[in-house]
Image (cartoon, rainbow, N blue to C red; front, side, top):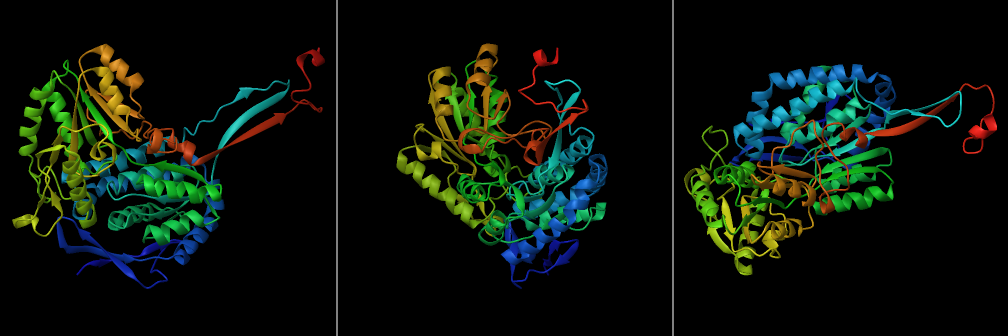
Length: 499
């Protein structure tokens, strides 16, 4: 019998006012129901916002180092439950155990970083232009943060948002993806166990159309942080803009890996396999385009194809499996659609391209690692985010052409170049239009203590991770302290007047 989960509002586990529920299922075995969850409404969101609003005055007054202590306790519990959560995550969203363990570890790293940031929420001071006057700045919480997260990193990405939002003194209304609510609820339970005061963190499960829209439209939510598709991100920016909310958008990618003749070919193949097919291609940073110099093309592709053929596909709970299922049937159908589009556009389907349905695959959503060659840069499969184990290979004649192709999409999240030529590497750093550039490493593998985000249509300029995420969840306050004992007029009184 599947587990029945509830919303967490104001420190209590409660049902939705709708009385309705939805299921979360295992994409490797669709017959397995992980749990059922409240199909919440805007009334449930309103209750969560009210609880967050009530908790905010007390929470913001707790010194940041003390808030950090609670987050440290939560992180220590996360360490203890790492294997349990990793196994739940593999069952709920499909990626293999080594990756789900890494997902939880990223949440752990983020939590410990936030704990330290409690004593480092640095502001800046500057000299005043007037005598006997101090000019100071401070960071203050925004208020209530509405957090909307995707299914592909169901612990790591919520951690990226929840830890810094709380550390900065905000209270939170959290809407997880409907594909991975069990991971989200178990994550919230950890904060409850760690002693987070009631109402500081609230979780409301349900659809984007109902719960997500309610978060966007609620006047008491001051900042919205979202990770997901460009289409939904555009909608969030539109709605939140009408309410003048702060918004952080982390959207899609069409990430290129360039391989030059000077590259270590075996290393480049390792990177391409991991970048393209890790998490079954379901990462915003996944390598979806391989841009290969013609002088190295045949050698690289021979090794890459042979290695891709040997990847083991299956249930991620099997430690020997390297590629798990895609998240659900709708995503599988989308991948199949793009394979048809690629063939219709004239690209050559070199490997894969099919759903796996025999034997152990029959009950899940499994898709072969897929390689297209003969891809032109303007083809849809080279321009649009597929979010599956599909990579488009483009042959180029020069480094300049490689940069032109790499930059010729609307996205700009991650990028990679394999080269042993220092000048080529430095040019890539300067010329690739992306928020992240890897040299001799794949396009995936961000570290939590460094800024994460992209340019162009990949986002709206904010960066999660590291110290930069605190810009999202804080407001600056400037303070002037005049101890001169007289009226001083900035920009009017000058040093000549004081002589």
